[in-house]
Length: 319
Image 1: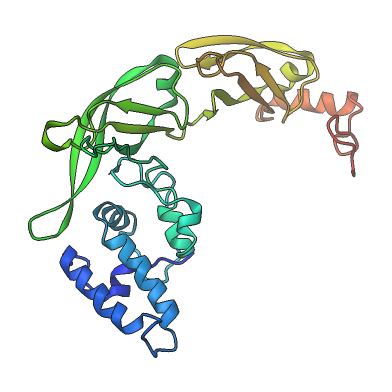
Image 2: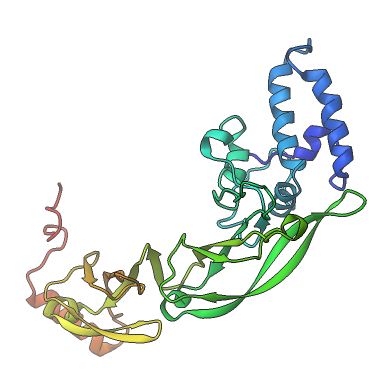
């Protein structure tokens, strides 16, 4: 996917004000609108202009685009980093796949799910403040133990000159034990202020987990690679498994193979019901880096009638 320079599309500088962006769009729209334009590429150009204006005319989308697009040139190969929009506070909802389909793949990748799919809450009188939302990254350990975390959110604003800037606000947030990926934590009254003294909206925090060197969450189930020695796999053994805040002893059955899995019920992320712990077995060979170790391997090679290329307990060889 190629990077799109929306500023170049509208012919404005990156520091352009909101009014300058509006004027540039209107001028180009008069030239390329298919109903009046005689330009051969009017329809495609108008589509590009609408896409660029949809992003740059919205302070929140513009600030997020500026952040993720730093250092990229038009046409350069581009892939948005995972969770690139985490930490932005939005008052508008993301575009659904259907809504984003009218624009390019570049737009869909960035803004199809930007900030989640929350819809602002409005009461009948339209006086209550809008709900805001943000994606936040937590550690998997927080899901086991619960915690109070200081979370900083970037809030796009427009100054008196019409320039977009980012302000930061910091909140102390209580993370409940058992929180799962995609769960929403609601902070009452932390959204937009209401009109004429009406209640403020809420702030909705959508939880995502940072990558962990050992653990991977899937709902409330927890996945973990479990290295075992060849003799533990062949003979069976009880091995220790460290989890956040706890230690388990797990029985590996005799004859276990690399790639096999063990499921430990109820030992995943806490909840009602709790998730399971799913262990992926990895048989790890000790190195033959001493005379004794090499002797043991040579003895096994002579005395064990075993050809791993002719036999696979999970899949017949050659199938």
